[in-house]
Length: 208
Image (cartoon, rainbow, N blue to C red; front, top):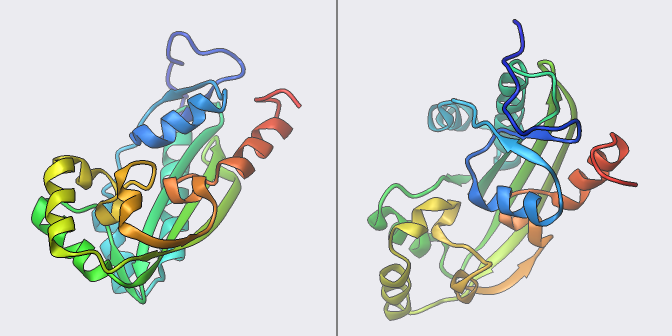
């Protein structure tokens, strides 16, 4: 397969971010990484269901989805491609992004008073092969918030709760849902950023 024509404005220090996540793009931009966004078309929900039916655990699913996206996207370019995925699991139950406010309410009620795990995986691929990967996990315990608080939270944030697994963003008022958090901040946002920056530095994408 011949690589597609590179987007205008890209330079030798640019990488491809195969993700539509505004949060991941914001993290990379704030860290000074030069990149171009090229989302890859993958039916993540179907793949996730398949992995769940096979009995895969949350961290295994996150790793597999990140790898699939990285490999597929890197077949279109000679540049380094970054792809990532995040899975929320409570015991063996897997949570995806809620598709409605009703589903968000249901997810948050299941998570209330419980400790769940967030697994964030990132893969870097080139020419159809993964050349680096990183998995990190975090544990988050939700407090036993009241029904009134949940009503307030969903009313205040509306459709925004459907943009992340579990229906929350800890970088905002979603932090009020929690009693305790153990893990890397960037991992919780969906990208093990410090390790990724170290990899990019070694490969000349950032100054050492």
